[in-house]
Image (tube, rainbow, N blue to C red):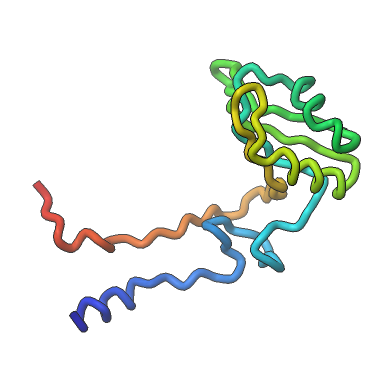
Length: 139
């Protein structure tokens, strides 16, 4: 048993402070949640959602300056997520708090503050290899 614990302790990976929930940030976040900004990431969109309907859904929280829905290059269908930009951080925060988990055209939305896209930064997905498979035999 002691040997197993020593082996497991060698496999534990210590993540740097700038990796939170498997995401790499350019600088460590000050808290466990992302800081508010005026750009929201909206996931769980129906294929029938367009920019106008998404803008209309969020416009009651403030001035929507831009809406972008991501589309598949080959099929032209929505990929199920997009971004909503507000003129003020406070409006985006209010919209996030109100719309997260709410049904929109039959599907629950997942709304969070969008991360800034960092080109050229490495994508780090921490993985522990070889744990939990010691007793499994290959066939």
